[in-house]
Image (cartoon, rainbow, N blue to C red; front, side, top):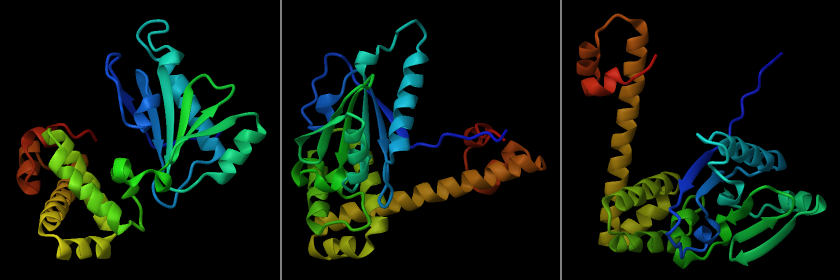
Length: 242
């Protein structure tokens, strides 16, 4: 029999019990929050919907003790750029209720074991959700400006690094729009250029890691020689599994 592999773009956000989230998207969040994100041009089908539920069930079952991860403390967030008209139609036909609770945020209720929401990034409010709105191939100029203004409000280096990653991803898909913003505002130009440089640096590291992996697989050079040839650290080379 042919085996099939389940490929879904999921990440998990864990929240402490005492933390209150004011963000519209985070208001549904409980202890363990599973998110499936579809990039521009992609969408969540009815099969993806049930795959996300299946993954959440699997995640719930893999606790170290019985019911360590209660279903009542797990949520699922589905994220895509465009309005999921067909998905909503099928879900409603099967008895689910779709409720718009905030612009671009729909709660899905029905005979499901977890709390669920659909996030439509194009419909989100610009003032609160520019980091998600700019992840598109047709970014709005005002969304870019709103995103770059956020940089002054970030307190931690991790938050700043996350912002730079978003700017780099968005600018790569929207070169003209970002170039226009660079010409109009020197502060924005600086942020965009830093993000683009960091993106290029990460790309070079990934290429070096790929080369090192190929060299290790050939079993001709030592780890020290591979590190020297690729300009990676010895620790990075030793960590590569082949």
